Image (cartoon, rainbow, N blue to C red; front, side, top):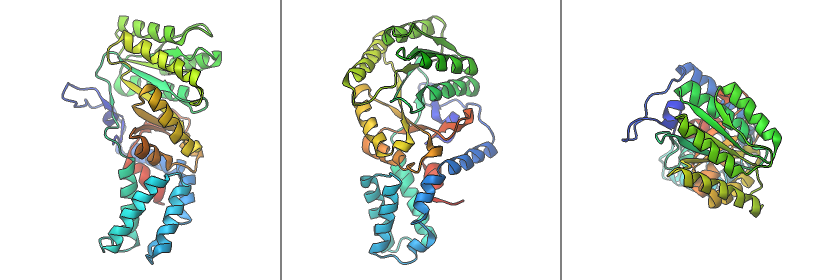
Amino acid sequence: MAQDWSELFITGASDGSSEPAAEGPASARRGFFGRLRESLAKTRQALSGEITATLFAALDEHTWERLEEALIMADVGASTTAAVVQTLEMEASEGRLQGPEAITQRLIELLAQEARAADGRIDLRPKPTVILMVGVNGTGKTTTIGKLAWHLRSELGLRVLLGAADTFRAAATEQLQGWAQRAQVQIVTGPEGSDPGAVAFEALAQARREQADVVIIDTAGRLHTREELMDELIKVRRVISRQLEGAPHETLLTLDASTGQNGLRQAQLFAQAVEVTGIVLTKLDGSARGGVALAVTRETGIPVKLIGVGESLDDLRPFDAEQFARAMISSS
């Protein structure tokens, strides 16, 4: 799992190696862990009422029931919770875990294991790499695009172009234009109400003319239950794939952490429509349901690749499963 930007992106040769990207010192990464812990405070508080050293002092049926209830309340999900608790109970009963601290550490390891998927990296070797951003209204999709563009330009020195294919709301284009200016990247827009596929087409055409490294296409926020809107999203994806072989190379779905298990349902339905390759879990700083990161990965197999823990540019970061699990459980 990626711990920093250099580990998230594949930018090297065909062997899959990644060229090192600029990254702050270890103190900066520790600083982000502190912000992550603060952002997961509500989730951790929801768990800490049950998951304490005293919980594992006497191991009996009541212990495991309390642990299950705590994890489910944090939206870890029923199947994930069952798998974690079953393994923990078995290892404890076999004497492989001695003492509350060892059990707590093993709990963190198991949660991290559940949060890992096959590959949480983003391949930037195609030129241009096309990233399609999807999600329902209010999940922080446009803000994520702006922050991601800023990191790609400032951390990796890449030429980035944005495509404002959310043509249903004038405010969406204006917001993305603001982010393009802030990130110092180019943007392609269209008139309000115009064909989103046409904007995506022009964005790719301009990117190829100007040899951009990455194109990020915004799409209209839509309810996953509205079939006609999902059909429009499928059309945009088809336009992209016809213009450039293999594109979109990455389809990222933004999920609001506060929606809990509803986010899991969104992931399942969007994945059926547009082959989602990664999750961006946003608004963790306001949610007690951070455990949904584990549930989504286990149930869909789609890796969480980025997390948002605040409003600043540095509060969008690559997802690290162990760091996330530790911030959920540990008080230090």
